[in-house]
Length: 392
Image (cartoon, rainbow, N blue to C red):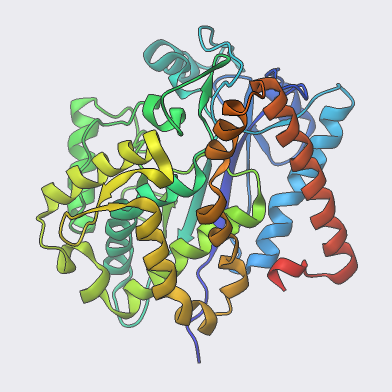
């Protein structure tokens, strides 16, 4: 009997605008009109959340259904959903408040400005027990592994090479500009370490509340820092292709499944030659390297600090994961990652197109159309077969 799949869910942030990539904010109106959508401090993007479900085919439906409702609402206003994780065509000089009366939004604008006006996808994975481990032991071991491999997830998902109508020096401009808070976060040794550290940060004022931990991966639950039931991967840029998003999620889940089976091999606290402070510094440096060059980045492996290209590290892990993926029925879910490794992520595709002479509005328009076409095809497959071919 194979292990059960983990509960999973997504927090998806999207920009709205015109088909040429011009961002047009309407989140307050959309959230008021559509169930399940919430505003961000800036009105140019909005968010929806999928409920927890372990099944990947079901999560595909949960990802698509809100987007279709939003698309119909936007179409009546000659607007659409936009790809990318930064204000590709601007204007990053101006903050556009979604709720001028909200004091927290005022704090965000005054403190961070448009550095936080980005779109991303957060992946939540339920991790409360497994293979004899105590719930919090399992969760914090998982956090350590995901923290040390977060750069690989960013390398797969990078989709923000443009800002204000120009090419930046990064594949994920979003991650380079986003204000990580607090500036330094340790590799949590256990639940009590996390509780004590959170209390210290709140007392110091480096965090405004328990949600104000903006890092690559964090614990999540209904009563933080005490009641925790999942880890939240926050580093990924927006992944507009839902099949690639599910593949990235399957990669993370399979790594966690390996960890729960053999913590002595996969928990960096046990399996690395580096100490916790060195691991935290390595993880942060890897994240910055992946933000700059994604799959082409040279990063440092957490086991021993040795340099390795992110693409090669991912290829090694995918080969190692293949038997477990087959056992858990995730081989087809995982398959799109090979295409990303071979052909590049969204940022790399856009940069290649721009190098070939295509304008940023043209590239964005092509992706806007591809997004809509793919969603229509997936929805037709679901309506016809019940389970879409790529996940069936």
